Image (cartoon, rainbow, N blue to C red; front, top):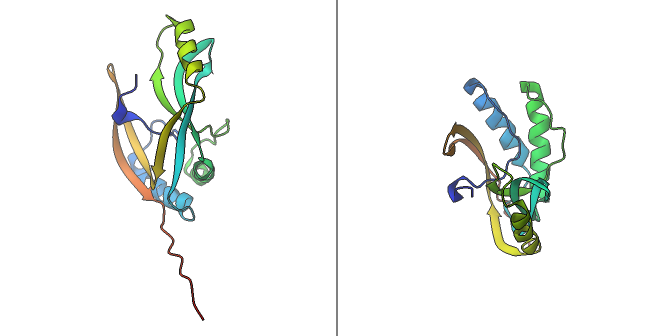
Length: 161
């Protein structure tokens, strides 16, 4: 299982990155969220990558994540001038809940995934995106926050005549 403190949604994986680029990456992040207000998503359903016959990742799906798809596309476009390759696959909103290291008990695991594939696990609020640094260790990755961009709150005012 993935440590609950490490659960996140990857909008763009950057790989090894020169820390001198962080201010520029942060600008791209802020621009990407500039017109998107905080919102909520539903954590719903389960599945596996690449598929249920050959499971390497178990995931929970996200409904209402369209704003994240927009942000991911804007980040992808904004990072091109900084030398980052554009994504080849479409954004697939999900949360990784487990990584499978061997093929033992795949049938049993696939059955569990199918049992939960239509389940609703609750609501997830989104009010910021975070640039994370990961350090891979034998016991799993260790993440730290490097920068963040808050989704702006829009105040709607009604004018009375």
